[in-house]
Image (cartoon, rainbow, N blue to C red):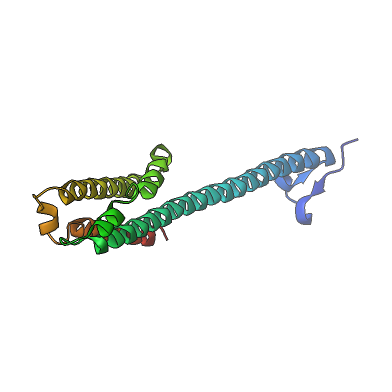
Amino acid sequence: MPATEYCFLWIDWWPLCMTKAEWSGWMQAIFSVAAIIAAGAFAMISIRATREDQISARREGMLSLITVVVTLTRLLSMEISARAARLDSSMDDAARDAFLAGDPFVDVLAAAYVIPLHEQPEEAQVRLVFALRRLVSTARETHSAIAKELNSSLGDFLLARQPFALILEGLADLERNCEKRATELR
């Protein structure tokens, strides 16, 4: 006795009519493929979400570095302005001692050198940190040159009237570059 055939959508056409065993085989194959596709789609959604989270975390890290560089730039600018305000060619001993007090710009220098450059993902970030380090070093060199001249008769830096002007200009330029980089990242 031949097996009973069941037809798809009750269309009595031979390719659409099969036995129960054939139908179950086809349904198993079709739904297995559908399950594989669904599992792949769920995996892709998870991978995409993870990738977006990594990109967001990387962007936030770069923005926080820019914030640190801007903060250090402003601190250095404030300290330079405070020291430059005490600088005068007719300084008395108390003013000279106040100008020479402490190791100049050491906090900003230490903070700039603590930033791990090898962990920065882009060259632009490294350039900002190097610019900050260079400006701090230049400010320290200028301060030491002024300190040497305070006790001599040369006075090249003291005659310049604003020996820190180029450094302050460089700091303003660095701050503009940081703001520009931050807008690029947002």
